[in-house]
Amino acid sequence: MTQLFPRNANSIARTSILLALVGVGGLGAALYTVNRSSYNSGQLIVKEQPVMFSHKHHVSGIGIDCRYCHTAVEKSSSAGIPPTETCMSCHSQIWSDAPMLEPVRESYRTGKSLQWTRVHDLPGFVYFNHSIHVAKGMGCEVCHGRVDQMPLMYQQNTLFMEWCLDCHRQPEKFIRPKDKVFEMGYKPQGDQLALGAKLVADYKVRKLTECWVCHR
Image (cartoon, rainbow, N blue to C red; front, side, top):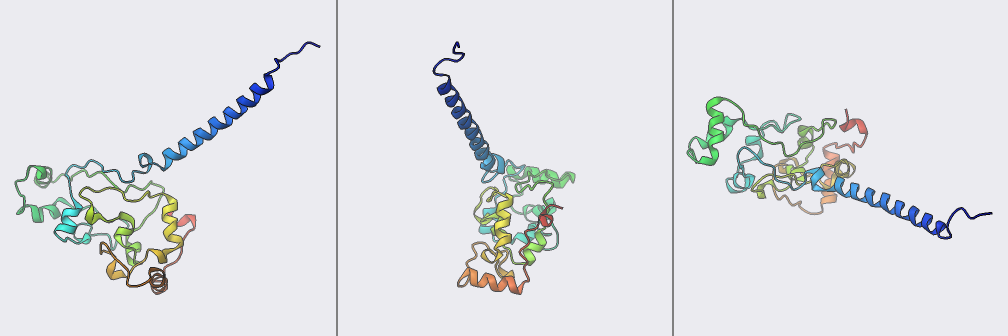
């Protein structure tokens, strides 16, 4: 019987299968890398804003409390963006003619709000409530990082689901006394896990990991 395939056909087939497997694996690795990258998560990327607002200057330099601008953070799901009037309460007197603050002055004159670019932008299918986290002793910097050291604001963490679950599964690693929630650079007195376990019990913190907690 005449040979239908050349003698090296088996080698070619095995090589083709191997290359296909390597290609699929490489594609999977590439997609995984892109998914975990800052390009996808937005982590550590400074976004363009209508005004170059420095948290470092206002928080660390001047000592303004988070709640002065983010007035709703203790009672609302959203921390809130300050109205232009809040900015002008100082800047009608300080740096009142600075060119970089002209968009603020124009907003105040016209009554048209500044269009800030959202830095921490969760997907629409994710529910997050600032007020309950603050009430249970979760500090601003746990999620937002050391904003008092950020000349321009950026997203400190990935905001991936696994990152949220790390805290929900072990809140004792992150919780702090309620009077320290807005303190930047907080250091626990003693062992964090021991203090955290006590605060979790005192504040009745539940380790909520069910899907419906965030996906409503």
